[in-house]
Image (cartoon, rainbow, N blue to C red; front, side, top):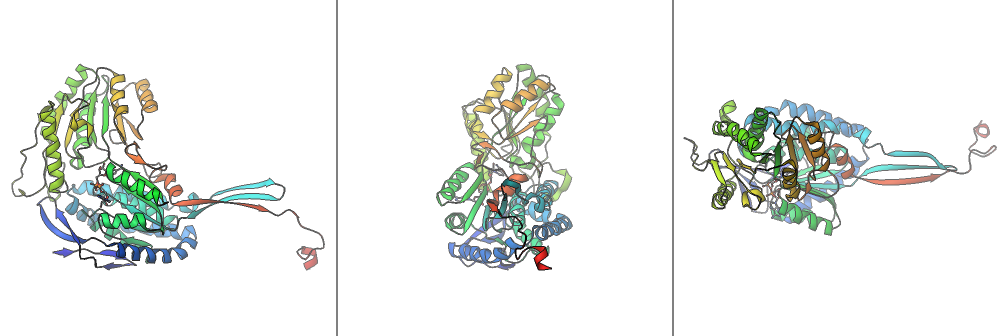
Length: 499
Ligand code: NAD
C-alpha cells in the first residue's frame, strides 16, 4: 500500500510519529494509501524552518514573487488532468467536477499575479509642513491553513496563493481524507521557482491542528471546514493572539417565486443539490417555493429529474452525475439524518436508501433523496447533511420564505429565482447571508471578489481571496516622515557646494 509523506523544505519526508490515517478509494471502499499524522514536534520543526526561509522571501520584490505565481499557473494547467484524476480517486467526485475544483483554485493564483499592485500601500504627500505619510503592507511571517476534504485543490490554493504572494511562508494542514493533491501542488510550486521551506505541507489530525494553534511563531490561521471545528479553532487561535479567519458549514436556501421559469429552477436545483453528492458548502439543500401552485409545479418537474440522476464511480466519465461520498462514516451520518426526516414526519418522495451499484458494493454511494413538506423544527432542516438530500419547505408568502433563510443559523449562500426585479433587489438587500444568487443557484464569487459566509458560516473579519486575502495576509505599518528644513544654500548637501 502506498505510504504518503509530508512536504518539508522542498522534499517528501516520511512521518516519524508512528501514527497514520487511512485514505480510501470511496468508489470501492478500499484503503488505497495511508497518510502520516504529524506529531507536535514535527509540526514545530516545519514552522521553524519556514520562519527561517521567510526572511529572504519577505524581502524579495513582489514582482519576482508574482512570477512564481505566473509559472505555477502554467504548470497547474499543464498537470490539470493528472491533478483531477488523483483528486477524483481520493475524493470520489466526477472527473469534470475535479477539474472544476482545480480550476477555481487556479483562478486565485492567477489573481495573485497582481500582487505588486495589490501590495502598493498608500501615500499622502505634504500631510503637514515637510511631512509625508505612507502605509506599507508587510507580510506577517508564517501563516497556516487548515482545509477540508471537499475541495482538496481549490481551498489550499485559495490560501497558499495569497499567503505566498504577500511574502509569507505558509504551513498547509490539508484534510487527512484526500491529502495527495496538496502534496502535488507543493511540488508544482517548487518547480515554479518557490524557494524551499516556504510551503510546508504537514499532514495530520487534531494533534497537528492544536500544534498550529499553539505555535507562537504562526501569526495567522485560516480554516475551512465544519462549524463546530471552526468555532474551536477561532476561539483557541484568538486566545493565542493570532489573526484567525474560519469558514464553517452551511444550509443554503433557494427561494422560488411564482413567476420563476420553473424548468430553469428545477434544473438549477438538481445541479446545485446533488452535484458532488451534495458535498459542497455552497450546495443548495433547501428549496423554498412560494405558494402551493409553485410548490406543485416545481415538485412535478423535480421528481423525474432526480429519479434520472446517474450515480457511479468517476472512472465512468460523463455517464455519471455524481459519485460516492467520502467515507463510510459520512454515508452513515447521511442515512441517519434521512431516518430522522422520516421519523419526524417529512414526506420522502425520492428514496435513495437502498441504492447499490453492481461491482462497487463496498463503495460509499448514496442514492438521491428528496423530501417534501419539511418544517423548520425537523433535524433534516436544522442540520447540515452534506449529502445528496434536498428538502422542500413550502412557504405561503415571500416574507415567510425570506424569514426562513434569515432565521437559519447558517448564512453561507442563498439564491432567489424570479423574473421580478423588485423581489430580487429586495432579497439581495435584506438577506443576512454572505453570498447571494439571483437566478444563479451556486453564487461562488470569482477570484477578484471575496468569498465568505455570515452567521455560523463564517468567523473573523475578512473573507477569502480577492482584495480581502491581501489584507488578511499582511499587516499595515504607517510611517510619518518630517523633513522640515528644505534645501539650504551653502549646506554640504547643496548641489552648488558640491560642484
Ligand atoms: P472538518 O471540520 O471535519 O475538517 C476540516 C479540517 O479540520 C480538516 O483539516 C481536519 O483534519 C480538521 N479537524 C477535524 N476535526 C478536528 C478537531 N476535532 N480538532 C482540530 N481539527 C480538526 O470538515 P470536513 O468534513 O473536512 O469538510 C466538510 C465541512 O466543511 C462542511 O461542514 C462544509 O460545509 C465545510 N466547508 C465550508 C466551506 C466554506 O467556505 N464555508 C467550504 C468548504 C467546506
